Image (tube, rainbow, N blue to C red; front, top):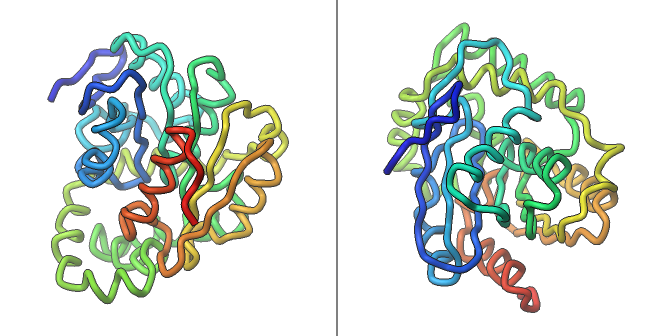
Length: 267
């Protein structure tokens, strides 16, 4: 799959399906396009699906900076859509991707269809700042392995950790391939994040999907987003943690697909 030169950076993307409308999927902090095979399978019979690695992720280039501003990540996405001749897109966005999606919704409202935000936040509170500092200390002390192990219980729910235990070494190996400078620059950018007073200006129809056991972005963040974004709908997925689309794809994808297609949401 190709890269596109945006001038200052080369972006990696994939397009699947041939629907009349596009769903763009935005990943969490240390994820990449490889995480979304199930969503591509579920969405692509109905929509064109655009997968992207944001600046600092996956196969997209990394610029040499201490901080990647969130507003620029949204600008990068708009420039990529321009290059691909996509005038308007729905967004399906998890965690860090959900934060970038909020900026895109505010900066490019006419280019956004419907918005699905999974396990994300409207602002970086004191708990998130403490977790940021602890993750950086874990990296400085024990590299990728310690950072991965530190974040593991904040990322996944108990059921997933039990069922996926044999896969954890593979996930850890994949984490080791992620360059730390880009991840850290993304994390530093999140420290400035606070859209609480601007949520009322998001015009897109919005569905919030949160894991019941999410420790990283607990449900009070979901409620704040729901209260702030006009008309936002909240659905909580039982038995999953922070990575709800990966922990229970059938439940999440049924909700998202019904929402994008304008159908009644399943119970």
